[in-house]
Amino acid sequence: MQNRLHKNLLKVFFSICLAFLALQANAQLNTSPYFSFIPDPDNTFYLDINCDSVFVPHEPTITSILMPPATILYPPMGVTGIDPALTGYSVGDPIFGPQTVQVYYIVEDDQGNIDTFTYQVHFLDNSPPTFITPAPGNVTINCVADFPAPLVLQAFDNCLGTVNVPSVDNQLPPASWCGSQPLEITRSWTITDPSGFT
Image (cartoon, rainbow, N blue to C red; front, side, top):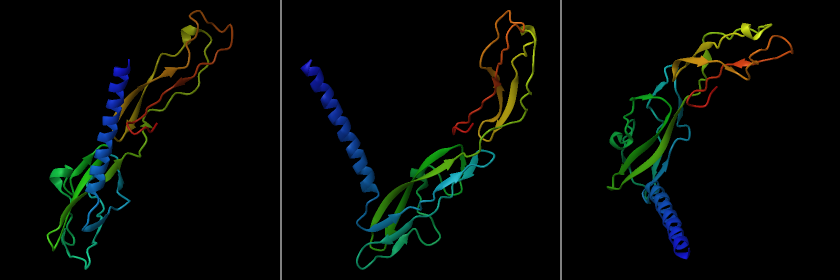
């Protein structure tokens, strides 16, 4: 029992160590003795009606922290320092679907100092799905034989396209029901897109 507990404690300890090292590596990646690197906080973009966008993130603010300050050679004015090989996208590439892109950005000064920084760009879907076909109105029936059959409605979402949405009844009438007692049944249609909009 003690050996098993000891092994579990060791596993927990090593997991904590690995997580700490990963955090340290990420912190070091965005800490530099040569540059101040401040990503634009407004790097969140929303997908259009076709569920796509274009990869054109806002540029970060980069300054030399050396004394006297060095001159930033790369990226030059009007050019991005995004590394497309590490990032997976070049500026102007199309983006399809909700996602978060980890951007790798290279900076170099005129004294030969080079650093790579990272930041995230978020592409979100904020368009809820809408029904194409309307739901039927309320109906009153006298017997279970008149109970309406299940009905499928169509809805459209910018990321899912056209979707068939089946009806869901909150309860079913008794097999032999024929108006002996009042009975109210609610029929509903619900669609939720990948971003959680309903």
